[in-house]
Image (cartoon, rainbow, N blue to C red):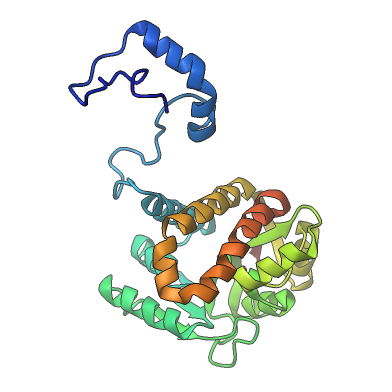
Length: 298
C-alpha cells in the first residue's frame, strides 16, 4: 500500500525496521481511504469470517463461499423445523450438498430432483461418500411435471433453493410442490426478484449466464404462491447476501481465468469475459433475493 520506506523496510533488503509512531500515523492519514475501500469502513479489522471452533477454517474465498452456503442450508433446515421423521423433497437439488446436509443433521430422509444428469450422479456419489445412500436419493425429474412416481401427499417438507428461477412456469412448479406435500407441509423457496427495470441487454446476460427467464417482482411471486393454493407464512429479504455473492463470483472468475480458458476454450471464454461484468452490474443494481416460506393448508 505504502512505499517501502513508509512501510518500514530497509532499502537494501535487510531486516525489517519497526516504524515509529509518527510513521504509523502518517500511513493511516495517507492510506485510510484505501483501507476503507478494500477492508470496509466499519472498522480497520480483519473481521471474523469464521467463528472459532467451526467445522473447518475458511482461509480462501472458495472456502468462505462454501461456509456461507453451509450456513444458508442450516438456516433453512432450522426455518422448516426438519426432524428425523420428515422426508424432504429438494427441488432443483444441484450436486446434492443441501439434501445430504439436511439428512445428516436431522436424521431424516431426503429426495433430490434435478434436470441435470451429471448432478444426479454427483449427488448419488455424495450420498454414498457420506454413508447416507439409504436415506438420501437423487433422480432426474422436471419439477413442473413430476409424474405419477411422485405420489400425492408423500413429502413432509420441500425446498427449492435458487431453482425456481430456471423454470418457465412458476405456477406449475408450485402446484406440483403443493400436490406432493402432505397437508400442513411447508415449502421454502428462494427467488431472484427485480427491484428496478433493467435494459434488455442485462436480461439477455441473465438468460445466457444463469439460464433463466426474466426475474419477477416480489408481488408477482406472492400472487403465484396464493394462486397455487399455499398460505404464506414468512417472507424475508436476503438481497444483501446475493449482492455479496455477485461480487465474489466476479472476483473468483478473474482469479481462475486461466483454468476457465483451458477448460472452455478461447471462444466461449471470450463470451463469458464480456458477460461477467454485466452480470455483476445486473445483480448489484437491479436484483433482489427473497426467501418465501409457504404452508399447504391442512
